[in-house]
Image (cartoon, rainbow, N blue to C red):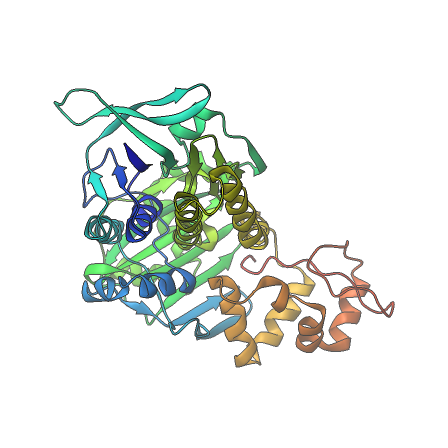
Length: 432
């Protein structure tokens, strides 16, 4: 009998297993994959995730594998170019974009070093339930006999199509249908001086340095263009990069190092993350459009929340279900502002007057530009940056009057109307 079984041993699952094992739990983590192996990914580990890797003692391993640190970023909205660095967060000042073949393997090794048992190439065939409570899993390794492993709690870190979530009928809420498709690939010999982000008509484009001297380019477009884009994948990818300054020219002068990877599986949802004998973490419990690159950092945050919650229950501090209720509340509160922000960005709406005013103001204000980049990186709270006070400071009374004249509808990101001269504003910061 184990204390915890974790289904899935990539970023969310391996981190959860590692953190629980470090707190003395008897943990079994299983995954159908063998490591190292690749998976679809945004690559970016934003600064909050990097801070956790540093705290866990793993950032040095990422850096030692020649993963470039990205401290400078260039944001091009089409009419305005913002360039700056990320604000320092908990003693880290850079994001990293490691290959998943590297990141997942480091986390699996760390879980083992912490005392967790990790079984690779183990296929879970069934979730075992007794009297409505999850009690374990049934599965096998290649060529092996079917075995049943039991635990006090089974954690599903098994992705967007979580078999555990399906088996227990986990409820979804705040769900939004896919808004974008995403394609990415790697280039050898594509020069960059940091991270690059571009907002164009019905396209979001990024370029980020990763391992082995390669640069990953990312293109997102509206979901209704997915099939048309896929019909001429390389041509449409290059045509999209051509929209991003000279990025297309640099890519054409470089060598594409691997195939083009892509997905239209970008639904946005919360899932109820716990029930009798089970919990969900990572994409199994929460997912949003990859345009903001928050997935890995969110997985680390929730792994830490869940591990601490389960450890408290195993210590007898509180009943398991009561502690898991707190996990759901903390997770939802932490992610909801960025979730809403991401859905807005993924809508690929055209830039409006209030956005133009903010961008123009940021172009003249390096300190506020740094804070804006912190918003995109998840270190500066959205409500702080988009507060009435900060927006008033950015665009001034003349800008407020222009926004008021546009008769914009009210929105949660607003300047308020205390004097009758202000209007609510709605911001979609990465589109043009």
